[in-house]
Amino acid sequence: MRLLFLIFAIISSSCATISPENIVKQKQKDFVQKQIYKEQIDTKNKSRFYNIDLLDINKTSKFSENCIQINKINISDIRVFKIKDINKILDRYLNRCNTISDLKNLTNEITNKYIKKGYTTSKAYLKIQDLSDGVLDISILEGKVEKVLADDINMVNLYNGYKGRILNLRDLEVALQQGERLQSQALKMELIPSSLDEHTIIKVSNGSDKNRIYGNIGTNNYGFKKTGKYQIYNNFNLENPFKINDILNLNLNFTNKVFKSNDNTLGTSISYSVPYERFLFDIYYNYSNYKQINNDEFGTIFKTDGSNNSKGINLSYKTFHSLDHALEFILRYDNKKSKNFLNNIKLDLQSYSSSSLGIGFRHSYKGGEFDYYSQLLIHKGVDGSKDKEASAKIYYDKYVVDLGFNRYFNTDNYLKYNFYLRGQYSNDELFGSDEISMGGIYSVRGFKNTGLSGSSGFYTRNELSVQYKIKDAIFMPYLAVDYGYVKKDKNSIFGKITGSSIGSRIYLDRLNLELFYNIPLRDTDYTKEHSSKFFGFNIVYNY
Image (cartoon, rainbow, N blue to C red; front, side, top):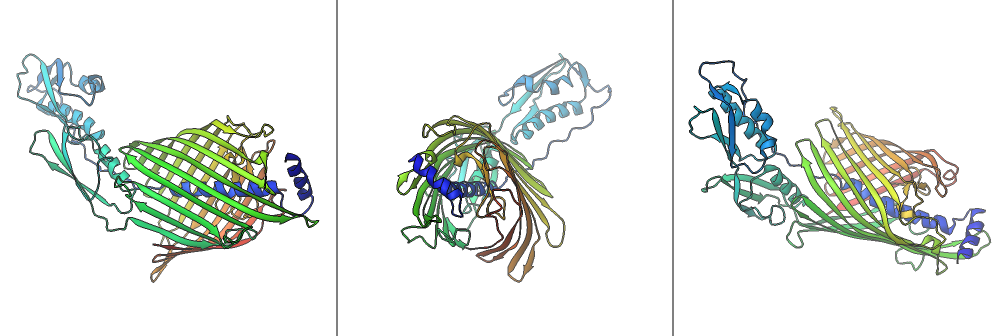
């Protein structure tokens, strides 16, 4: 079979037809880039942060006759912190003469340490005591949760084991963030004093009137003439299918040639996400197939067909968040398979499976004039199968970085600059679905029918947009310039490409429309024969 594939590749390289190898690469490129683009959009989520004022700390008073010598400080009922964690505070008040104001500062400083960590119902205080021996006893009240009252929201997997738990506002904020992943949940929280000493009642209510079922139906001309120029797609979401703040997402993508026995393509995906306190589990499966009939310059007909699928689980843990910043750690497992055939005979060199583990982090910042996020993942190949003559490695290492940046300008037309970078580095030869690829609607615009791919490289997308409102419609004209680079190695399609786009997005009630014109600006020897100007449209109805 490898000899048959080689003969076709040699014939195709000498004429204008597309080789089976290029068809396979094109399908893998489209499959991967759509997933990356979806992940890029999904990085945006709601932020929750309650800013609690710290207690006032007055300047340390100078020597006063009305002061008390303190040589030792005892602290009781402390569990959140270790004594060594607050020694720095205590040292400032030891072995000196303290006024009443100084002692108030001391308890306020300890209380502020609790507040900074989110323990807003905890405090340090002084009981009536005899200080003539120079010993100061400080008591700690660590406020606990009596119960959680939930109105139209299930808090079991958002804030579990709450009875008697020391109340931490940061944990509650994360619970609200996890719950508000769902558009049908707009949560309001109240802290209510309890009749029990040292306890608080938490009340969480859902004020959203949005439907649990939503999605969109759309069409565009992003497809290929051979397998269907017009794509039709549907995105369906069901929130709370099991009433545990979970989301089920289904996608279907096909072309206007879907009912033809040949020359068609079909894609589908399903994902399910569910939180548990600071953890978020996301299970997914993506699948696409294609069938294509081609002929060479001698009139010989050959058929290529195949499928690509990926499945896995992503686990993220919300480690830290503040008013502006958020940090998550990520652990993921991916399994990818590709099967490709020429005249119903399996292409062994182009068919494989690959499994990897990834670990990394995601950091985001949101300010008044700009926001950004960064994500770094280290992938390690752990399993797979391939033909013995295939040169790609099963046990590989690769590093992937994503950066997103938005700059908002204070202008009447809401001028905005958007930047996105995707970069990858690996010293190993990779399978097609593990390579970085670029060229197309979702990466470097202006190269819809061609592109670059390899183990190492990067691409950037840069866009300037403005916004105008005309009656009930919002118009967002934009100008974009994209750049891509792939490092030269044994099997890479390497070089540098630059593309541009001019277009506009239009929003009218439930209808979204995008019109654009993509232009290649810089080609490589590989892309110059197939890069071309492209007028595209995408129309979406949201339900």
